[in-house]
Structure formats: structure tokens, C-alpha cells
Image (cartoon, rainbow, N blue to C red):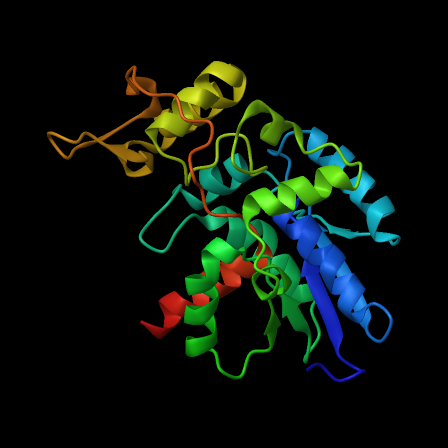
Length: 257
């Protein structure tokens, strides 16, 4: 258990799971600890995420500290353009440069992090704890057996409208055109957000084949989003949650391999 002098740090990513995890952390520790709720502003998220954040502040009964990158203008496309890549074997640079660095500058020694892992992600928590036995983390959703759908229902029962991306049928409120998405996801983005889809196409035009996200299943050759063919449209495609602490966990795992 955290000592009374320990800060409890929740990362609110404008998604249902992080909202419920933050609310539970406040219920568990708000009366005895300094519970901080932080968010990284990202220019490429849907604007309704800011409405959701404001509604959750009311639900939490306290303000959320919003951190904002200035080097890249909090814009994932600017990260990709200046870093000259979109994704490699270690993942995408956007979370690290627009979120992780902000947290590293803001955090204090001894902070206990609240992970928004849901019951479906028990294995991710187990892996992190196994590889980081000295890192104190709390996972209130897993402790209570709450899944993603449970979190959505709890947010709605609190009288809060889910973020617009959820209401369109997407599985999360990540950036519009998250580079972790598959072909079906990007067909949905092409239909729903043609301007953002074209921005990613233009970025790939500039950066070339090294920035291509998908492979032809027959030839195994990578192809641009401009050449994305017809096929299934998957708004509910499972994409990893994009947060400070997921990036911390994944970076620590990669470093230990």
C-alpha cells in the first residue's frame, strides 16, 4: 500500500477506462493521499475529447492537470515528419515524444502510477510487474474485474456522454487515424474523416515506403494508405490504448528484452 506521503498519479487519456480508473483511485485514496490526474493534450484527437475531459472534471470533483508539448505542437504528424518515421519495431514515436517526455518532466520520485488496464488486460499487468518488481503501480479496474464495456456503462450511468469516437463505433478515443490501426480501421477513417486520412497519405508521400503501415498478404510488400483497397470496415477494431503508462510499461518491457 502507498504511504500517506505518496502521490497517486492517474493518467486520463479521454477514454472510458482511464476515466473510471481515475474515479476509483479517488474513491480509494482521495481522502488520505495526494491524487493527481493528468492529461496530455494531443492536437489530433477529436475535439469532443475536451468536452469529455470537462465533464469528467465535474465527476471527479477536481481539476485535471493538462500537459501540452511545445516542441512538436502536440501534433503527431509533426512528430512523424521531423523524426522521419511513423512506426518501427519498437512502436510509434508519438506517445513517447508527446506524452512520455511530459510525464518524465512532471513526475516526482516515489509516485505511484494508476494503470488503466481492464480485466481483459491482466496479462499486460502481470508482465509489467514481473519485469518491474520495484515499481509501484495500482490497477483498480483489474482489482474489481472491470472490462472495457463495464467502464463505458459506468461513465454513462454517471450521466456523462461518451466521447464522440466511441459513439461512432470506434473502440477508443485515440488520435483520428491512429497509426497502430489495421486496414479495416483505416477504411473506417477514410469514410468518416477523409481530411485526416488525406493528411496521413500526404505524410507517407513525403516519407516514402519506410512510413507504410500495412503489408500485402500475398507479396508481403508494404503499401501506402493511398493504395488501401476495398474490404471490411472495422470501427471497433482493437487498438492498444494510448497513454503515458502503457508507453512506460511497453518501453520497460522492450528494454529488458
